[in-house]
Length: 377
Image (cartoon, rainbow, N blue to C red; front, side, top):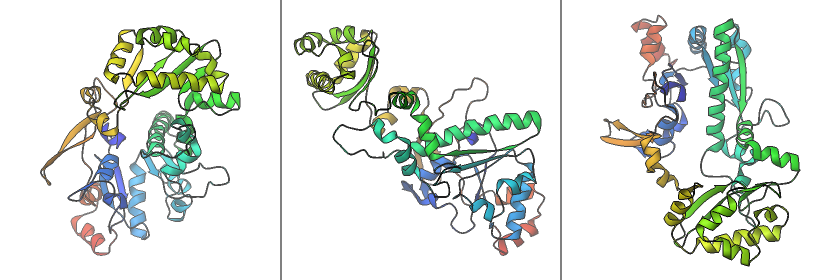
């Protein structure tokens, strides 16, 4: 979808009967799937029975002229069905072959299937949102799927640039677990250096002398807000909010103590929780922003889809679906290009581009009809 948004011709290969099962996933509107639209808009659909020799031959003819081939089947399935890397590089030595797995190509579980939940569970993201005293859990958003997809996109572009410059393709492998591990960023590095789990309940980091904090608290109505402060910002921010006298009274005004004492961490956070519950989040956010601090409301997914900055930047947009008489909100593009702006398309009907793609390969109408009759497409 990301490649199609940016103008690439992307052909999705689907089985002739039923197609991709995700066509029926998510929210459905008269056969239009929120899941399928999100991941397949702007691409072309070609149905192929890859268990047939004719189907594999058509795939190989497409590969001969392609820049990139991607698959995320269970490890070993591509090789069994004739479209593994070694099979396809013989057809097109400049091909960039992208393979996505659950756990990664090495390790004891390389052959196991994986899902978004596996990536989240093993990659550490559950701790990023952990609440002290409560069991960690994976989230409702497909963090592993999305981060892996974006990293895969970057990897294939690098390999494609190499192939265009040298004529030599290569295999690019990514995984759901690997994507989440990278997503954990410097917090994971800090955890490894300290050989200790990070503080949960808030992100308090740095050193005793130079602490920083990113934390979420609820206002008097239970609406959450977030702020992030460097070590130089802590006291000015607390002063601007009017919290400093109470923090000093309770001996909780030194943020660095949270890094050396669990008791002090809890005292600081508990005091902040009480104080933020004394008024509405709009006032707290305005106060912090006016003081030059970083602060924002914590949006639900629905609130995020209506956030003024999200809408103004086109991160969410609308697409018209004449066949159902509705205009629906969808993801916009996360990029702004000055010369080649992204274009938002719609997902294809199953086999919608069969005739177009096959005729481009030199098949005549009668040949295409024959392929359809033999259930090759």
